[in-house]
Image (cartoon, rainbow, N blue to C red):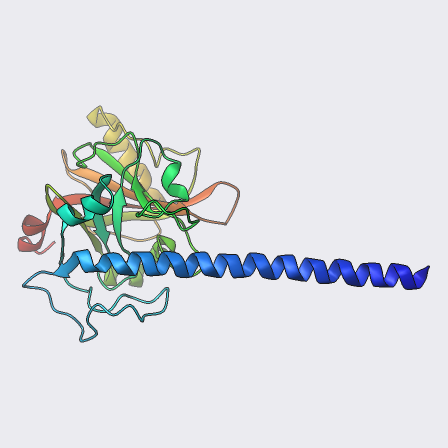
Length: 267
């Protein structure tokens, strides 16, 4: 009887190892598949004439979680070509000298792109997407982008680095490209939020409420930024999962400013 029990336990352990190994291999395959898909989209973006590559070109041989070589300057995107791949394209979000350089889509809801790539392929890495209730051209007072916190460091996982003041000072802004024009998104707040908080409040009117909301998110911030949004300036929030407690999220709030105006002012 003991012998039967022993071999039964052995078989159960082996079955568990096989299942666990299979799940791990499936996850690795998804990561690699998503990585190849998004690296392929780099063909649709390029450094502008004033940008300078770091000598690596647009190589796809970088490891996940590393800054993408050749993408540390201002970039341009071919939205006409991207729209041929996916007509739901609304922009491209790029963090200079970071792994964040992805197309942005807007679906009919906030669930489809949780597990579908830009190409439409089903994959747990998903795609960076604009909240379905936001204005497609980012003209609303508050726009929100969602992206997964992937274990391999891809998608929006690196947002967690904004817990560090030194990281913020080295990466104070994102570039947001849209078919309508280019924008610089100056980070002014970053923190761990609960889904019950108002970090994702889309409507920030009236002005009195907006001022209180801005002050609240700045008080919560783990980094100190030099300036808050001025009256009339639009806000972009980047949101991803966090794991400090149930329903935790890490959010980064930024001010949407015309690229040329923001850079000519030296802000």
